[in-house]
Image: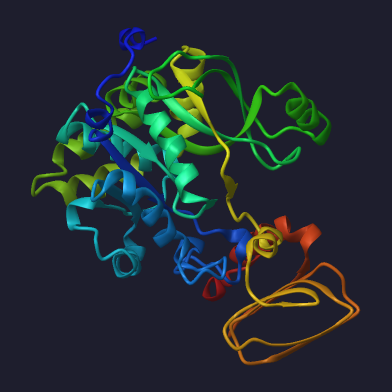
Length: 380
């Protein structure tokens, strides 16, 4: 455990001034195909009917805490779309991946670059494609996480579970920590994988478990320390890239080193090993949270027009419904008529049509994998 942990933070404004937001904007969102595709992943879409994309919403949620101190990690192919949605970002705020390498490399690179700018930075990583409300409650939790991180800990924000989910990982915490500015911070015992429904019910009854939403706040130096211990090959590669980042060797080093990096999630690369070492804390978040993992989630979240029990998305969507329920997303002017179908999911785009049910919404990813295997890349 870091020797800094015995000291409580003081001078809250000074601590918050060290805080830097990192937004990893990666992944395709294959369970939302054909709406979400490689060229237009889900974070570039307005999936809640709010008039704002998930990426833009994430940026605006963080900005009151960070101001312009936001770093975004995304693929080269998404640069123009990201810059169009976030014109506030300068070139120095944009880290472009040549190819996807999972969150360990993306967040690790951000930590390495920030550490070279200022080793005292406290970074917070927040995915670009989550739906969170209200923003004020989210920011209250982040503030507590920053104060906790300032004592020398990696901090995760745990979501108070609303039901015994089998689709999320969990965080087990126990004793409260006595930290100034973070009255709700607790010590983390362990991270656990997605449980069965029976085990998930036991987790909720115990009161010791929260959903793991993949939000991490930490001193960049501590993040890199644990990355070096658990993933030395990844650490060495990211360090080489970060050393060259502010030089004219950036593109050459990135092109040579990035493809060789191992693919691993930040949970496995840093969070779980750090928890075993006693270096992880948790701040509970009482805000609503959803990772919009499939079309069933889209139906829950969307505030678009409802026809009977049918949620309809799409400007000018032409839908006729009789005794039907579910979700319809239309990107065309085709008339969609549904009669006597319950819990249906229909996604109609110009070159692909998806029909499934909310019960099987998670299986859309398998269809994408089969299309890829059969060479139908034009619709992916």
